[in-house]
Amino acid sequence: MTAKSTITSNEAQIRQLIADQQEAICAKDVDRIMSHYATEVIIFDIKPPFQTNGKEALRQVWSECLPYFPDSFEIETRDLNIIANDDLAVAHWLSHFTGMEVDHPAMQTWMRITAVCQRNQGEWQILHEHISVPFDPHTSQAVFTLNP
View 1: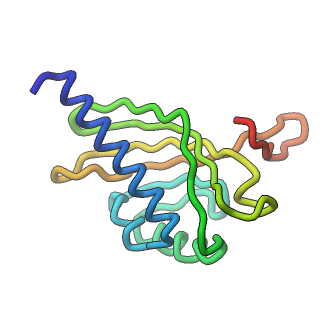
View 2: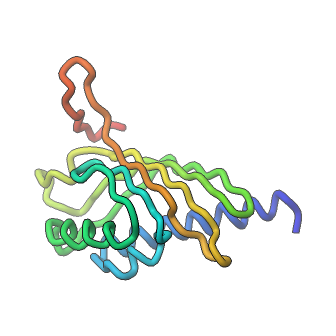
């Protein structure tokens, strides 16, 4: 296998990991969501606690968060960029919830997401994730816009 085809294969695997993660979130399947994270994961989130360390703490965050989502929704992704080598990958993209009531708070903005993934015993896992929304420096308020 050439270096180019290895990179392409790794990028495809990361794309699949992200897609499966999003499907698991939409299904509100905590076990499936958690299956993609490394034990020592660190998350910088858009909502309190803002930083979560470790898989068990993150499981608690997801378990508390998912009941606030409607029974049915989808996640739209755009501008997905991936850089990957044999054991480490970085991906960043814009993400937006769809299929909810128009005035639902989660429908009001595009989130910016960066994920660092590491191959562990042949499987890609999310080692670090950073989720943010833009803010207005003049008001220090989050900018909720549907125009990324």
